[in-house]
Image 1 (cartoon, rainbow, N blue to C red):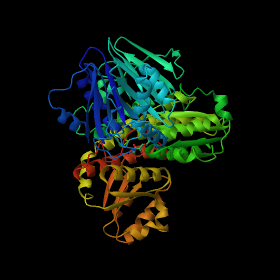
Image 2 (tube, rainbow, N blue to C red):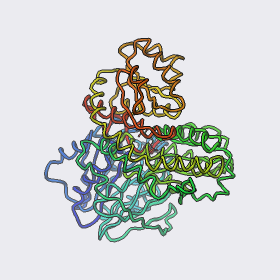
Image 3 (cartoon, rainbow, N blue to C red):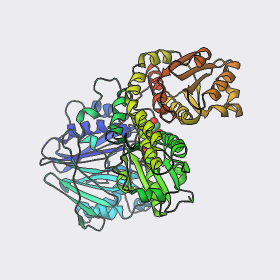
Length: 610
Ligand code: F6R
């Protein structure tokens, strides 16, 4: 949600900043801008829309300057136009600031600053911060002192980068609630919202924690707390390969990430399956078996697609580990008065590890004494650092805004955790071994489904003009119906709803006619016969049925108008296979409708505002 990148060093900053911005564009693409410090002044360029537009406006002669900051915006306050684009400058153009987050007391501060003679140019909350820092900086405070003083007056969340003509080779960055890191190069340094922006230049990064300020110059960087006391921080060496954050021949990141799933699931499982013992080895849990045995209830909390994975986790935990499990939207959990204690295990699921609501829900759970775990993809992200322990997904960077490979890795990780907890409780060694073996076979089965992409593409042709689609599933595949519907609506803008198939009779059945495609997720599992009856109910009302079925299922083959087959696996793992055609279907429909699948309108990856 908004991307920031900054550079200070010996090279011209503008091309580096533009390249960094492009890698951060998934975080927001309402507008973009950059500010460069050169010859005692700050030159700012901004454009509404995507980074391409900014680049086009700049032309071939990029502005000069060896220190600069840049921003790609996901609008919160103020329309996504050029004036509201970041960076914002103060009254006299001494400093420029890029911000990710929300300043909650911006209204009051704006009134007070206006009374004190400041002129506002934009409608953003961010601009108040610029003027607050200006007041202190122009009175002689150093940039870092002025930033600290300005931040002390605001309420809300921020990740910011600030430059000033008075300290032309310095970037001051600060973080409270919005991710930020310092990346260390050779006589040059960067700040960025995430490592993908700087990976082409260095793999050594220092993640800022909340309440920290960084002072970054070409030859040095210092991390301070808000009281200006210097802190020792560990440098993380990233082992990401640049190729993993590039499209590698695919038309879109989303397609690349869908097609990578055999490998990403293999990576989630690697080294974690113990076949002989019928359990999983999870080194990062940081919870001893005794502590896990104390747990008498699990609460899974997450947002969006990760929440759908959580629902599958609930079914797994209750069926195999026999432990009461609930799943809560993080945004609801955090503002209720949730009943959790030291025997409750609260599991946050998040691809980015930065989602504001999930993070806040975990903090609340921790405050109330619960044990906390994170199932997170981005190594070193805030959630990963704040929970007691967890399972990294190792799915590799997910850049497409619609989550795909993270979802299947989340389910695989939940299966591992179920195995681990289950084997301490209700699951026999034989059952455990069966799950381990099924997990080990999964990547090959995933590949078999992905090989059917051309078949799904053909099916997409028939759904291009649909205006509504109903997705139905039962048991483990009810959350898959929710996920299929979410994928379709978010990237193709076709309205879609997911329902438990039997719930259809309690309302949605009224929608069914010959124009309404109904997509059944109906593998041969424990509830198969039940869902066949639901298919009959739709057919009896003239509905058009598309079904995701198990290979060789002749029963549904006769009923469905179209079908896609997936291989057989254990019931609890079927979602990993059945969701694949739904991801592909949404992708091909969106592409054929001319939608920007990697950057759907109004969305951003990593939702760091609540
Ligand atoms: C949908 C999607 C979102 C995210 C949600 C949570 O395709 O990507 O619904 O799943 O914003 O994000 P994370 O998992 O990063 O916490």
